[in-house]
Each structure stands twice: as C-alpha cells, then as structure tokens.
Image (cartoon, rainbow, N blue to C red; front, top):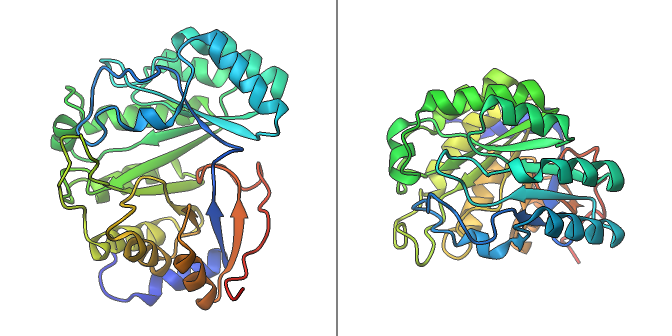
Length: 311
C-alpha cells in the first residue's frame, strides 16, 4: 500500500505513458438508460438521480431507434446502463436481440454497466456483441448492505466479475472511494479482487454526496485519502491504464481530487478542469482529448487534439 513517497506512483506512470487523456463522453459516447427513471434498489448514493441524466430508452424499439440515430450522426459508441432490478443488475434480457442487431448494423462500440449479472446473462451479453463491461466492484459486505440494500456479498461481486471476464472481451472494474458513507472500507480489497482479471484499465470514482439522496450532506473522502487509494492502484497495476471517472465531487474538492489523481499517476480523467489540464502540462504530460467514456480502450477511439494550456 502506498503511503509515503509521492514520486513512486508518478515514476511508474511515466514508465507506462507520458500522456494524460482528457475524456469527454458527450456527444459521441452517450449513456443510455434501459429502464428510464426506474430502479428497484434506490441506492443511497444515487436515489435514481443519476438516471435523470441518461438518454431514456426503456423499450427495444426505442433503443434501436436511438442507436441508429447516434450512428448516423457520427457517434462512436454507447454506454448501456439503467436502474438495477431486485437481484442487483440492469435487466438486459428484453434487449439482447436488439443489441445484437445494433452491433451488427452500426458497428458502435457497446459498453454495458452490468451489475451482478448471472452467468447465463454474462454469456448472452458476450454473444450479442457487447464489447466491454463497466463493473462496479465493492470490497466490503457491510458497504453492499448499506448502499444497495441487497443480500449480496463481496464473493458475489467477485463471481460476477470473473464470469464477465470469461465471456466478454474486456471488463473494467470501477471502484468508488468512500462509498461507505464517505468512509474507506473495502477499497483496497476491491483492488486486490480486480487484479485477478488483469484488467486493461481500472476506473476510480469518488463518492459525490448528491442532493435528494440519503447521502446528501455526507462528507466525501479527503483528497489525501483518495490519493492513497489511487497511488496504491498505480503501483498494483503498472501496465494498465488508470482513470479518474465521472462520479466525483464537482464543487468542493474538485480541483484537489483531480490534482491528487495527477500526482498518483492516473492516465485519464473524465472532464477535467482547465486548471488540472494546466497542472498536467506543467508536470511534463502531453494532454490529449478523447471523445469517449474514460473506460473505452484507446484503440477504439483515437485521441484527438493535444491541449496547449499556455494558450
């Protein structure tokens, strides 16, 4: 576990890459909710609020129409997400044939925010052409009960992750720092679990206390604590890309968390601030734009322009 020498993660980062990808999902890689605004779990950190910012496609016909429209307008891919069912996963079942058609006819890169899918559904997602699973990985049983309110365990998360890695080309673990009401509980265990699949990329998130949720007013983890987790991830996954994802505080602590991510040696930041881009440049990093979700492999979408923060 990283605790003291701040330069170790940065040196590991420089051996891996001297680039920082600034990732912008919209408009070319939007998120679609397959359940509209519905979710059976109403998790404490979300309260269905995040579904409101997704494109609603609650029927196979709506999904087909939207994806063909996106493809014709130049989109490169989509993230299929939505609310969870009572079993803890997005109900993809009615959409499988449509996903297969979309993949065959448009060639869009298809990511899926899966949840705790059973084996048969993991196999079907691979069969119909899903390219990548964005997998929320939790490393503490009490956190699962507190946040999701379901009778699932860390072992269930491990099994679903391993199943997805068996049937899909790519699985990208997403680990939320401070998910346990702002406390650090299972983050380091989650990193250990993620190492079992040798992921091409690991996404770190930070609890963002959100209005009208049960976690409104909760203190998020400090930038220093986030940095400890991020630096540990950098050391554990020296060959993988490391990203700071979309979910993180956007008002208080935003800049501090982004700077901590830079110092810990991340390779990607979703929608970074201008100050962060300038800081990366001053550290000797080449900052490039990636018009896609931060979990998408670089070969799928070629980085665009290089930023010049001096302008």
